[in-house]
Amino acid sequence: MRARRVRDGLKGWGGVGAMAALCALALAFVLLLPLSQPRGGDGSTGLTGPGVAQGTTAADSHCTDPEKQTLSPSGADGETIAKIKARQGEKRKLIVGVDQNSYRWGYRDPNNSGAELEGFDIDLVHRIAKDILGDPKAVLFKAIPTDQRIPALQAHRVDMVVRTMTITCDRLGKVAFSAPYFKTGQQVLAPRSSTITGYNDTLANKKVCTAASSTANRTMTEDRDKGSPIPSSVDIVPPVPNQLDCLVRLQLGEVDAVVTDGALAASQAAQDPTVKLMGAPFTTEYYGVAMNKDADDLVRRVNQILVDYRANGWQESYDTWLSATLGPDADSSKPDAPQYLRKN
Image 1 (cartoon, rainbow, N blue to C red):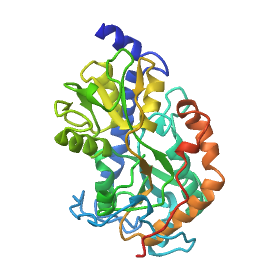
Image 2 (cartoon, one colour; image 1 turned 60 degrees about the vertical axis):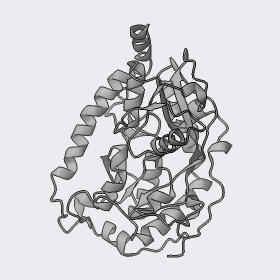
Image 3 (cartoon, one colour; image 1 turned 90 degrees about the vertical axis):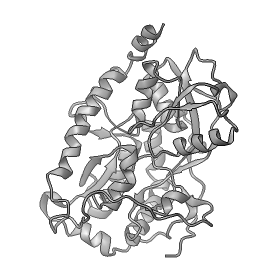
Image 4 (cartoon, one colour; image 1 turned 120 degrees about the vertical axis):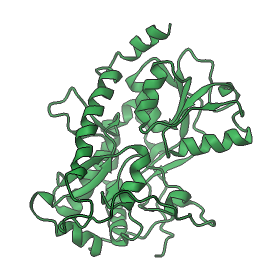
């Protein structure tokens, strides 16, 4: 039965196994890009930092409503944006950390010529590049694993991260965020034949996969330690670097379920019809564009871009990439009207 489920899971959309193989090759290629440059920057990039910094700054213990802890919009240029615009020739690009294996968010479709990055997150990146540099294609994409999103920013290897990254109080102690651009919630993904019904007691003694440094991993660990709303017998297996790895492990029968954001889980279910979302979302998550804590002008500029994007562009991108997996009604995915409570 396990072998049959694996075979069935590899059908559709060119096969997730084929996609994972392609992503692995492409990831290896993309990750070579920063290695070909001096770690301290060459003076033209505006990027500095000796390798990967490990953030230890604690978030404000009084942090509430993290999705509101951002700066008010502004179209003005500042020091950070000036450095980006000062890049010359082929280096005059926005450097963005993204995913390349999240179906319909940031991925390479092997069925398309050139297999360029595409998806909902990628559309937003192009919009930001067009506003700042006047060219939507003026982007240098850097594929980064889930657990390297913050280190990549702290080491100044990227200007920003647009990678289904949830705004949390803990992360606000390490990086800055824009206002939310998407709303979702964590859900359980399991085989259709599973006895698991959601984020509840049916996870007892089950092996569950999460991504490293993900909100899902942290939430599950805390809830399991409390024994509620999931039992303490849940086996949270060692987290994987990328979320797609969890789907592959599920297909191979190495785990019984995956816990991740519902928006990502829905896309994974679209890739593999033998799995499905189990139960309703049990958290509320807001995705934001992550930037360095001292890049105030860039944060304000991105927030200004998002004001325009929500009115003209967001819905079109949703219809193109996400309506097939999340449904035609985008209301539940649209963040509330942004609030800008951060003062400095």
